[in-house]
Length: 156
View 1 (cartoon, rainbow, N blue to C red):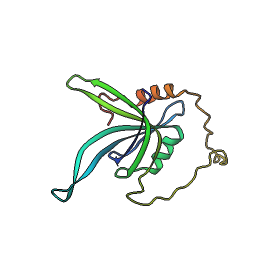
View 2: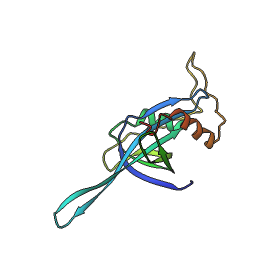
View 3: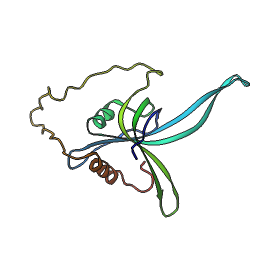
View 4: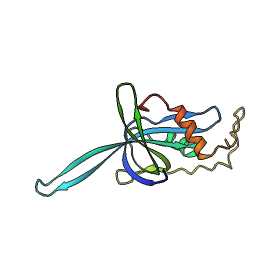
């Protein structure tokens, strides 16, 4: 599916960062998103239902998310939507996953300081290995991520 969506919400789990054996960086977390509305008759804000999403970021975005985003942060996420039905021995359900294209802090709720990462200008530290391009297509990267995060019906 190639639908793109933008969400605002709360990072509900600590971001989980892995690097595959091929050198692909993957970071994933759960996002809780709910809408509030003002009830004029009661004169107060009411919370709506909470929607839950699994957000996955690949490559450099995944590396930056792992070092920048924490559980409890308010963020904006833009990415491609994947809806999957799943079944286990006891349960079944639907999960909504977002393959992130961009993630940032929601400045409605606070301030952030941005530090630009210049990839080509840095030299590796002595003894550190240089990371080559993994040469994978996005579909291959998603397949690796699915295999890496496959822990039954629920990823967290």
